Length: 242
Image 1 (cartoon, rainbow, N blue to C red):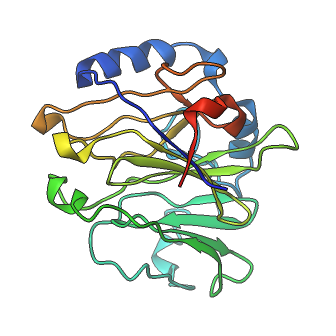
Image 2: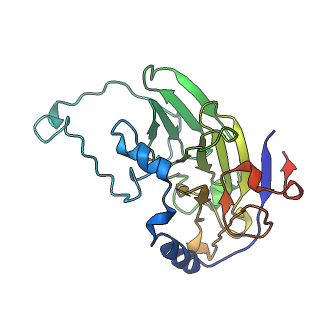
């Protein structure tokens, strides 16, 4: 069953930036499992490759001498013409791609890239298209590797209409869904989520309209600022089925 949660509470964009800069000052916030995945050159597990976010790879098979010889091996189209700004994620031979609005998510088996492993096509409020200031882009996905047998590995996706969804990385099934922005006040979501330990950090778009938001749901709390990855962090009284 899908779970959804509505969160209220606004903050200025400057306050959010200060809060995040304080958090990221300590190495202890890293997700050790993501760090290990990023060390494998066959993976691209985070936007920016790893926590340095510099997209630097030590691979040398493609270099300045042979890059001119590259040719297209295969291609994949989402069928949408608006901007696509998200870097695909690659984890254990599966590529995860998202699109511009309506922010579809696709999983491709790189051993057979012509076949879609699964796809997730959300139904969003179409009014969000009129709120976005600068095209209907989305800047990518995030991956949360599970460390227990109860929670699946998750793909995190932000949606233009203000929702954040967690998808089962193996099946594409919606695991949880939370409202993080209100398009009625000019707030949308285009940024890629960011995983820290078992928490996903999300900042909203809409500063040019004076809108900003931060949100969190943590263990045993109804009124916190970040949304945890684990479904068990929600109290039953906070849940409503959709």
